[in-house]
Length: 516
Ligand code: ME8
Image 1 (cartoon, rainbow, N blue to C red):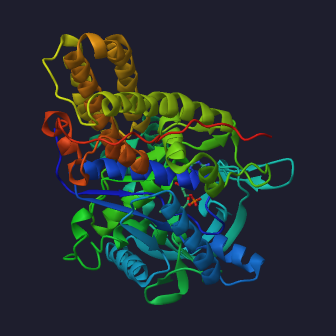
Image 2: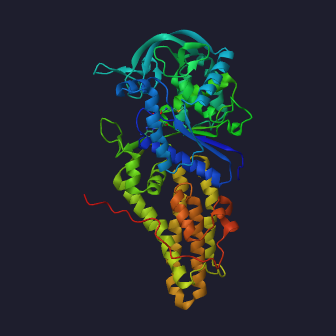
Image 3: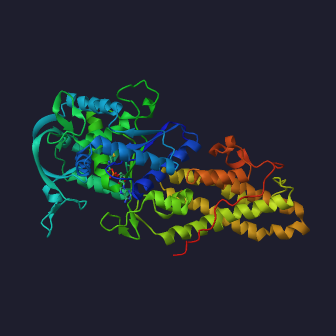
């Protein structure tokens, strides 16, 4: 069933302490595909991404580089915006947490948590990871042979002692567990849900939510010696951009609560424990779902600066092409699981699924139409069972992909579309339209019509994943711009005989590795 309610989707906001890497690109591409899918399916979508600019990590990196944190943020945030453009991301806004609107929203949520009686001042003494911007219990850390103590994500922790505001997280343990129980879809995938539930069941301690030993952050209202813990402000970005708190009659306020926060698995605790607790405290509605994708590994290994295998998304796109990269990540990696990538893997996908698959199907069938049917969409004669089955397979893709995308199973939605490409290949080969040319030209016309009609539907459905290439495929079958939404799938938008076609230009060239 089609859902017409507004749809709000977010990525995590990235730390601009360095340039964007392929993990950031991956998250943005996947979230973009989901946003585009819902838009094409007729929903009013608000898609947000941005940068998380406060905190100790930013301050330390800036100091090392001899510039101010604001300069560091300006420089690298611009790189993230450039990446969004390069990746053809359809985000409706790009939020920076140093913006005024965000300071206002963060202070507003702080005041509400205070009014609820959930903030109190005390002294913090414990472990902190600057790289993760996270507090850890001692039993979550380990002292290794190198004499350094590490947190659960493998980053070094340091001892912190300072005056701090605390948030009464302990008071939300039972409420959170009840929320997970009553809203089984709140956290996905299932592994992450289990992980969060067992973390919360193991007992929640109150959370230190302000810092006094540095000042790169949002001031605590009425206590300017304190800046907010960066995660309090970072999570609030999702609210800021809707103006739900600061201007409830604003045009975007209707988008809160978010339908889905898309994040990586390393930050599930912040999104599925702290964030809903803050919102409950502030008396605000909770997001409907938090979905954690996996990590991208380079040839199976974790990317790290020290291994020298951090891949620059700009280079990757330059080398393979944007839609090729989008397709690879979305089809190859099971969304929610870790995924590995390599040049060979990307080349194989490009050649098998795109060049030899949909690209070849479109060019073979459409060039036959141009040559043998006066360069016009041919008339479709009486349908055989095979023709009807072929059209039915294409017509059923909307339901299948809607179901998979509703569960963030992007790779399965794509696999279903590609399976219909293969089925169409078999249909086309089996019908032998080239042989029918002499013996039964009307029958040939029907086979070509059916094939072109399937190409049309596949191209419409590929738009969320490969917007530009899918657009080119739709140009090849002469589908007007305003007939490219999901409402035009199936019977509603069948190709019109007599529509002129041009000789097809290749959309997906074969990838040939450059000589070493
Ligand atoms: O965590 N593969 O920012 P960030 C896949 N500012 N995803 C990856 C990845 C990889 N190798 N490396 C990172 C932060 N990510 C916070 C978020 S949200 C209110 C604040 C993902 O720049 C990571 O999981 O470290 C996260 O979702 C996003 O990239 C930004 O990471």
